[in-house]
Image (cartoon, rainbow, N blue to C red; front, side, top):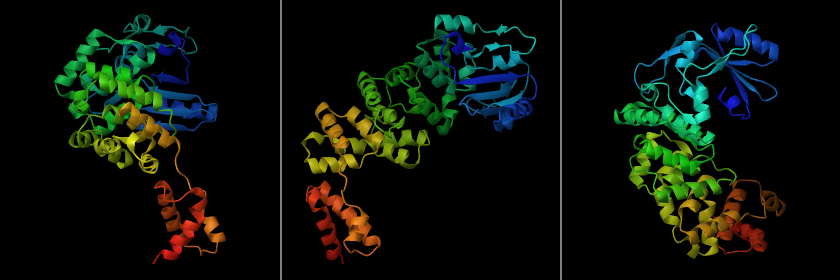
Length: 373
């Protein structure tokens, strides 16, 4: 309903029933030739239609929370109770579509007026305590829609931060909210809003919305068209003034593991190693640039001084690639085996260091095999 009132494109449909939504979803799936994905715990189901549309189907329900930040316990309820559990007034509207209905708008919390006033408003003071991730969602909706977060809602969020509600939210859930935030436009404004609401503390107290960091995050967004870059570009640019200890603490708080976790933990050292990049020999510059992931490359280019930034972008845009392949070594009489791969690695290193030219690759690779013990 929110997007209908705003005349925004609609890519999915949300249906709520005061009966068993799961049984209805199975019947509707047979009608539409779509297999439902069922979530019994929350009494919901999703249909992905062949045309690309998604239909979310839910049983009208109410929620209760054992503690702040916990996942909700749900029970079947009537539609008025279902609307009362929503996050914001602009999401707490429904349109009756029953056969005898006439499209009556159900809007018990004034969502339509808040759409007109361009406000993101929570329904009640306990909302950010029950589910603190709603605070990050408020930022996401405000920036996406060009709305403001309503004054009382801001106060409720700050109170939830002050009473420790956010400390009980898992790192996985916080990371998911950041992924969603930085998967949409407006990175710098989101950083500002997060800082104003006091939400940097639950992430890491060393994060801020300073002018320097806002500028770096905004620059990272402009550069993030780099193939392969993700939301992590924004986080790294935002974390560009953290120490090793602080970066490690942030990675732990967000339960960030794998390559992303390693990148964040090593980020202060990575940035230090790139300072003075513009003075490096071309071969060394390409070597360093080639070791960076797309996210690291974007965030570094956004965080380094202007001269280093330009040199890094140029080096990253002109990577060294071997002209020869394994088949060329096979054709030259080298037996199949691990020596071919090792020779290619040695030859690439020689190219990166400027020891050989493109024309010398094959002869260098063959010599390296003959020299190998």
